Image (tube, rainbow, N blue to C red; front, side, top):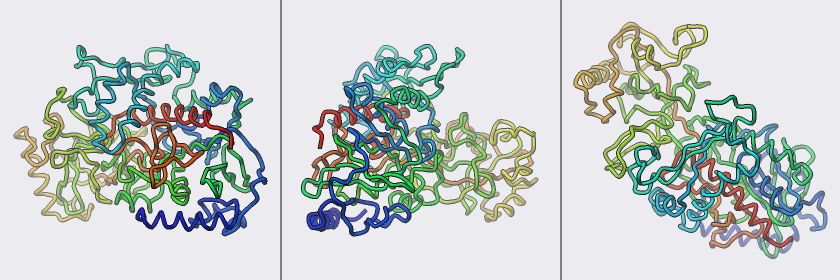
Length: 546
C-alpha cells in the first residue's frame, strides 16, 4: 500500500481535478482495471443530473453481509427502495461455501472483554462494542425474519458455571466462554425442509421483499461516484455490458468480501501469492482498488484465516482433502519441505486444536486455529512455502490421511499422491534429498515410539508413525479461507478516510475491511456479516437523502 502522505497527495490532486471537471467517477478507470472502466470515463466527467436510475440504498455484494443489509432495508426502511447487486451469476465469494455458524451471546459486555483480548489493540473498542451488542441481537433477528427454530443447530452460550461446555477458539483467555453458536438449517436431528444455510435463507427472505429490493446478479460494481465539493458518495456505476449510473440517495454499502483471488494482492500484503483459497472465485479486490482512489484508509491487510498446508493432487489443480475437514488428515503422518525436513507443527488444518483448560498458558499449546499456529509463544498466521509434501504410510492411509475414493482406487492411481515401497524410492519421486527424508522419517518414528514429539510438540494422539509400506507423498500447498483487510470501518459501519473521518454515504459490512485484525474466533465472520450488514443499513437509512 502506498504511504499515507502519498495517498493524501493523490487525494488532494484528485479533488482538484474533480472541482475542475465537475462530477466524476472515483475508482476503476483511474486504477486501470482492465475491462472494468466504463467507455469514455478516463479523464472525463458527467453531469450530476444524468442518472439512469435511483434508489435509497445501494448494496454491493450478494453474500451474507449484503443480503442482511438488503433485508434490513426492506423490513426497517419504511418503504425505502434498495438495489442489491452481485458480481457473479450467483454469489461466489466465501458466503455460500462457509459452514454457516454464527456466534451469538447473552452477555455482550463479557464477550466484549474477550474480543479485546483477541484484538490486541488492532480494532477500536467502540467498533468491538458495536459488534458485541450486535451479537446479542442477531439470534432473535433471524427468528423474527422467519427462520424455523426447530431446524436450527443452536449451542447456548456458556457461563462461568458451565466452562466445560464452551469451545472458544482461544479458550485460554478470560471471558472466552461468553458466546454460543447457531446455524440455520443444520439440525441433524430433524428433517430439514426449509433453507439449509444462512445464505440460502437470506436470499429467500430478500426475494419475499422484491417490491422494495431489486436484486440483480451478473452486475459488477465498476465505480463509485462522488460529489466533487463534499466528497460524499452519491451512487455507483454498475453492470457488465450495459453499465448504468445509479444514484444512492442515502448511501452505498460495500459488501464485496476480501481479495482471496488476487494473487498480486495476496503477495503484496500477505506474502502468499501461491496460496490456494478454499472458497469462491469472485473476491478479486475490485472494491479495495476503488476505495483506495477515493481516499479510504485501510486496516488489517496482513490478516487472514490461514495458512496451513492442505492436500492437493499432484498437478496442484484441486483439493484431495476438503479444505474444511475433520478429523484433520494431517494427524496421520508428517509434512516436509522440498528439502525433506519437517519445518513446523505439521498437525494442521483449518481448525484443529486440543481442548486446553480455561485460562491456561496458551504460549505452550499447539494446534491450528483457522491456520494460526503457535510460533514463539504467539499465534500468528505463518507464511508457508509454495510447495510441501505430506508423507504417510499404509496405516496412515487406512486411518484417513486421504479420504477413500468412491471407486476404491489407490491414491497414486488417482493422481493424488506418489507411492513407493521404500522411503528412498519415495524421495526420488518427490525430488527431495534422499538422506534428508530418510533421516526425518527415522526421527519421527523415534518420536512416535517414545510418545513425544521433541521437535514441534504435537499432541500424543497425533503421533502416527511412518513404517508400513507402501509409503505415500501427497503434494501440499498453502491454504486459507479468507482475508480480513480492507477499508477502515467505524462503529456505525461508515468507511473512514485517511484523516479518520467518515466518507459520507459510504458504508461496509462483512469481510470487506473486517474487524478481525489479530486473532480470529470461529463463527465470527458470519456473525460480522449479519451484525454490520444490519448496522450499516440502519446507518444509511438514518442519513438524509443526498
